[in-house]
Amino acid sequence: MIHIPKSEYSRRRKALMAQMVPNSIAILPAAAVAIRNRDVEHVYRQDSDFQYLSGFPEPQAVIVLMPGREHGEYVLFCRERNAERELWDGLRAGQEGAIRDFGADDAFPITDIDDILPGLIEGRDRVYSAMGSNPEFDRHLMDWINVIRSKAHLGAQPPNEFVALDHLLHDMRLYKSAAEVKVMREAARISVQAHIRAMQASRAGLHEFSLEAELDYAFRKGGAKMPAYGSIVASGRNSCILHYQQNDAVLKDGDLVLIDAGCEIDCYASDITRTWPVNGKYSPEQKAIYELVLAAQEAAFAEIAPDKHWNQAHEATVRVITAGLVKLGLLHGDVDELIAREAHKAFYMHRAGHWLGMDVHDVGEYKVDGEWRVLEVGMALTVEPGIYIAPDNQNVAKKWRGIGVRIEDDVVVTKTGCEILSHGVPKTVAEIEALMAAARTQAA
Ligand code: GLY
Ligand code: MN
Ligand code: MN
Image (cartoon, rainbow, N blue to C red; front, top):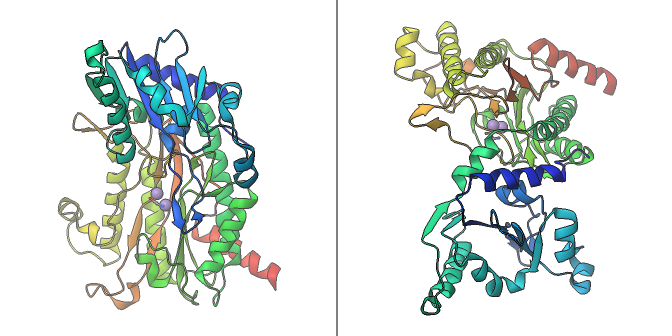
């Protein structure tokens, strides 16, 4: 399995600590186990920041980083080994494993954190934490600080600065290393296979969930633990619902089906959308809209390179889509004027993409000092223009209504432009129709 090497986690911790002020401490909790319903838990997914710095896959753990500390800069609190619990729930690293396998300089049982952590915080000027995102942990942190405050008369020094860790950490996460790109390429490769499989299986009379099952099969078979987000399998007018997840309608002859799905590998997401005809052949209207979205995506790729800013790709999609909708008679007027009053938003109501990484909508600022961010090598993003013609849109001829098309690929910025990580799913009308025709011939 392709994964992030241990050495990279160590490099990340060092890089973060190099940016922390002297005499400071960073504290990050693992994700909590989420209950689905009585006695049933959601599949555990580590918190992305925690994972980024440790690769430690267990709940009930806390990372503590103290740059320059003589007795060890990296302390991990985690669950103790426990034969009975491990018999029921699976193996635990324990403190030995935390040091041996996960690079901690020192490790303590999580049950001892209230006794030990105040002592580690005491005397440090600044505490970095993800304030506000985990109220329970924020309360714990204040409890630990209050333990120190209660000993002030004995000379204990509580920290006087509390700083959000996000700014430093999320900027690091925005730039993907070679190892990260490799993992993201693998996530995309498996998702590409999943989309091809769903395309080949597409038939009128099946349900949307039948195609979702094809995706899930390919994800798991490829080694992914789970999808990076709830798969969207939206046929017919459902394709105009941006975050449709019901996935239970019958696939109808003559309809399109839009699938937005991607798996996660070692906590790195892929995010791919394709839209194809259920019966393997686009109608003239479906084809016209599809090819317009594809042209918009091509225009966006051309605007992704170092020194271009974040919004250029989006602007390119807006121009192509607006001009195309005028040409098809779906919008009326002067293209520049229509762009100025954002007329496209009736059909294209989202942006051309987002950062992609450990979170499908990944962290990282889109603007710096009020200006769109300039792209740099290693930034990963999606490119996903779409056109959605509402089924009840009375301003357009009936033949257009209910058509929804999105095409989404994952890219990483390179020195000369961008690498498309998710290439390999057929994308032109001819490619898709050929793949689907071949699948039908084989099945017949
Ligand atoms: N799948 C979520 C998105 O495309 O942003
Ligand atoms: Mn998507
Ligand atoms: Mn996306």
